[in-house]
Length: 318
Image (cartoon, rainbow, N blue to C red):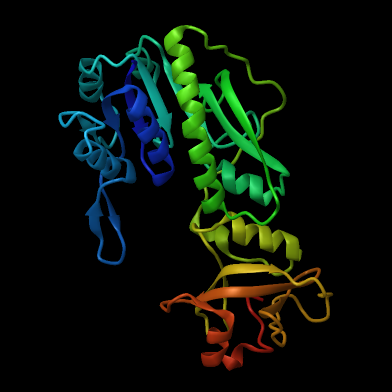
């Protein structure tokens, strides 16, 4: 079995940690430090740190396995990593780029799980990028970690067809499970010396780090573009617009109203029909679930019961 240092932070990395722990030895875990969650601001461990404790309790990871949670990888942290004598680094969404000094600590190098078909959508948000672009397929890639982000040789890749109604959270969840299975195959091949590597070919495309303000809806865009945005930004940063009273209105679930044509100014709320209908630049969006600022998410019928004045008003900044 390989001795693995596993680096990851969010929930999408947990299946890979679980799979690796079932077949190889987890020498140590590298994850982000606890962060404030919810309105209370209570500091909570990362999803990977929490999963590590569960796996220790279940006997799948040794109870003394260190969980390193540094703000950054300093020489002192590298000394701790070196002492673990790990054969290989396995990474999925750790959140930091590894230096040459750190990578040199692993005799078998490092591998990374990336939820796209590299070289398409390198960078920090490949799943939202694929949905926003209307890609017909995506997938997961196991690649070598190099100093250039997401540019390493491909060890394995698996494609997934897209139907056009995926949300980013559900798609990432699916890809993380597929990536965990693929990772296990790669680690086994590295261990027995049969792993093959292929350089990335073709022009790379790049995803960007998402910001909260990216979620504001531009009603002048087409219905398809807005629908894609809502799905791509679920759950974060979310898609929102402004109501006439200035409150933010988050659109949590919507779809394209098939019979819709442009008849009003973009952003105008029309009479409801199987959803709250909102005029876009080219057609009509049918909103199924929504949430007013400081309120709970609700279905469209329940929302209208307390917000009848929404009909005929105009949403957005203009």
